[in-house]
Length: 406
Image (cartoon, rainbow, N blue to C red; front, side, top):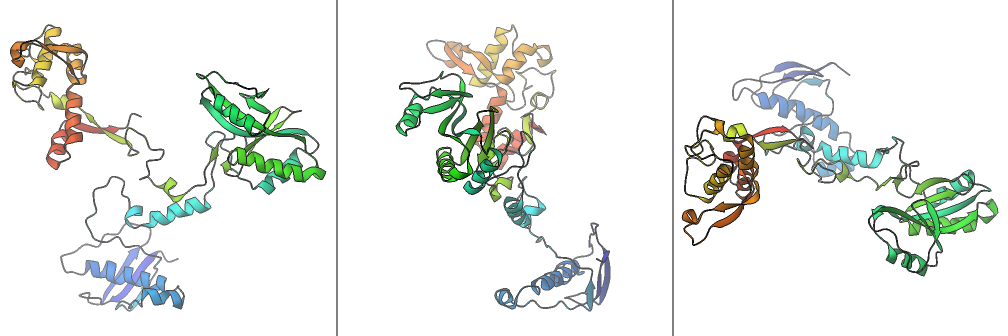
């Protein structure tokens, strides 16, 4: 592979016999006056020739659907590899957009990982495996020949509940034994567990000594066990008192955790599956900054120290702040710097107790009692309810971006 792309005698559009050498493995900018031929060189010469050569590798049948591409007016281009062109268009400001998504190469990459990727257990680091019924039977004959084993189908894995209905269903299906939290026990009418504890329950589908002469029974038992366990099964070695997991799906052979077969959407960072609930997978959050809400602590709340609210007005939020200040022995004419941390915390984060608003303020016959959710919630609710650019810009002046704490 050449270490440079060499263009000789480019005459596309307004290019006048241009010779160019572009080093490979580096970022190169083509710059110049409007109409000087920047796009003609990049898109209509280098990209067009790279794409034409790629399409020529297709069969004649496939090329019929794509149409013939004209060779650019150029003497010679060497050193080209497969090319990508990102169109000169205004893309939306999506924080999840990358070069991969804009060029749609990421779609193919996701498909590659889903089909050719290898899964590893996040518990043990081992490579995940999956077996067919025939492979499981061969493994049992190989690993447990002459041994007494129990074939177990997992029904519940580490979940709370009394499971009385489950045990009744197991009895109706004709199974006599279950393994509850590692202990083998007979199923009895009305049987139930402690509903407030986590339980793991497996039904004993068959108890047998593994023999090559009895492989038909083993085959049927494995089939039934996988059916009852929804593609999962456990083999309990009675003598060694060990348990091994087998699965039709991707599974860790030691810990028994299983994954569904990977699909392309598992590798999409636009998919909400597994994303952090706080930042939705972006890695950063927008937090309300107290210093931006009250930049000048020498002012009083009455004179407009709280920038989002402005100067004192006869409104409910000011009455609520007055009630908080009164509780701590302050007034809204005191400078913010003199207020206690407790009073400021309640003003920002809200009050746990109901506040009394005097009847003289509300112009009613009796005092009014209400809860106060705080300045932060007030600004956030404005952001959530008013999606206009003006409202978002207003909220933006009181917030800063920081790494997601979750």
